[in-house]
Image (cartoon, rainbow, N blue to C red; front, side, top):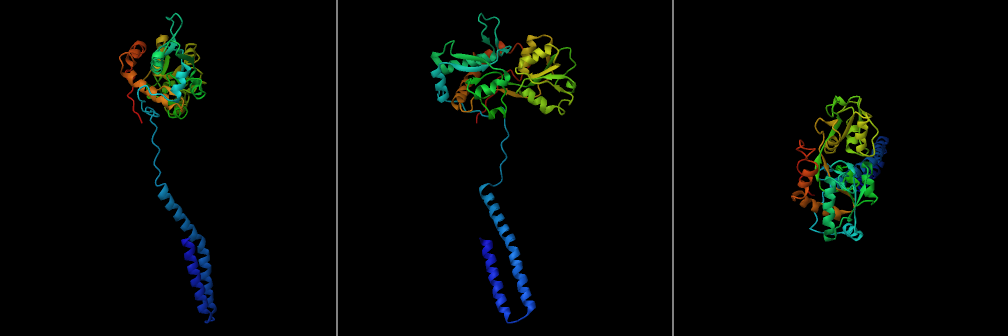
Length: 352
């Protein structure tokens, strides 16, 4: 509006000048006036454009300012809801109590994490993750807890997130690594275990780790696993372009079978899982050091904020109780992770 007012003011001045020059009768003078008039007309779009641009920029400076960079995702703290007050309930927890059963997605084939105990008369599930599930259920149900308060559902690696999103389970406790991409699809508790990706291969293999010795080798990983993500991202960079990444398998343990059958030369998976697999098969071993740092979390539905906070409250006690994290670690994992100082203690939670 200001630019248009300036133009009209100048145009009126030109008209006055033209009137005052009529008496001169000079063609040259009139030509000058015409040139000035045309110049003003031609300058109108530029004047308006500049005025509008200036208004826009001013608006941006006022309302937007300099855009702040998005905070870097921290996979050790993402979605860490602060612990709920003791025994706090909520919509999700109330529904679980009313149902009388906590539905949990677990593994039944990961030795020492979640597996069918051959020493059990009924082949009950046992392991580090199973101990944690039991602690969560006992806290939620309190005195109403019984052996039937938990419904374990064996979930393949590639079905963990769909099972949560489709409400087939209330949570997944299955050596599930917290990642920024996954945290857009499910909610995670604070971390309860720290590990890293590592290579598993036959003891006689020339492979020495996640390096050039993987060149030309058939490497197995599970579908939707962080191992598979790293393999595809690192090929031609951290590892040779000649690495043959096999079609991912539905379940991580399938890779061990392919390794035993000679169909795979190496497996890339969490070091904590690989150590347990090496304990099952004395012909294979971990090669090299972990090349990532990863955290396991209890995964739940994005809408189940009350359950996430309750689990974080339970973990607070579980980490420090003599009969909690330390006792479970000593029983199940210490025999296979003796040399892994990274995993020897529970990660310290950092809440938002």
